[in-house]
Image (cartoon, rainbow, N blue to C red; front, side, top):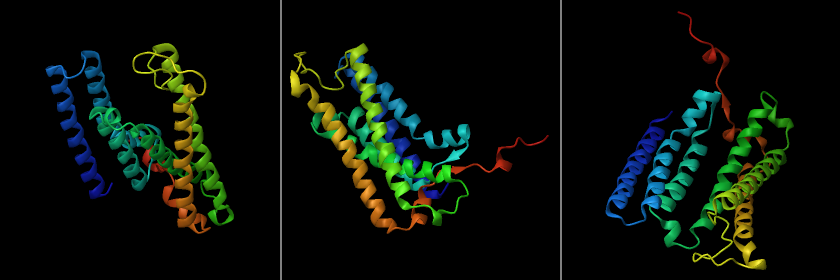
Length: 230
């Protein structure tokens, strides 16, 4: 890991701890209902833990994510967990959720490129069309967006969490087309984010498949996996 990687990781951790202290203060002062304040604290703790997810993946499944992709992931973590949820921008800015649904598929598209690079292994990339990367990355982000809506539906079905905004804050249910607007808006912005990333990659690559190797997920070498002899 580079020095800049460690500095950004440390800065993210310090920021997360600072926001955690703020959320604890909100609990103590009663700014939010107790249950809601506790949820903010739990999500902040999880956010701090998720900063180290790329390194956990490397230790558990022996795959390293490129630093540039990790930086993008940290940016999404910043605007979603720390700013959006724990500092409540998602409650203050009514379109903040749509921003998250646009940025997250960009990260997922990049991960899709990385997965294809991993699956290709030692294949000569000169023989591979860049469209394989572009289409898989776009499709991977789209599938993850659909699976996320399934998750929100399950939370609403069994936990009445109103994540898909099927009713007003006062509990009055939307009827007909109005009940679909939040979900369809999420799917649209998810597709838009994946499309933006795809267009960006297409322009940057200029038809050269080698460009996508910078996204490749790297396997730990076999000699590093083997346990050291005593």
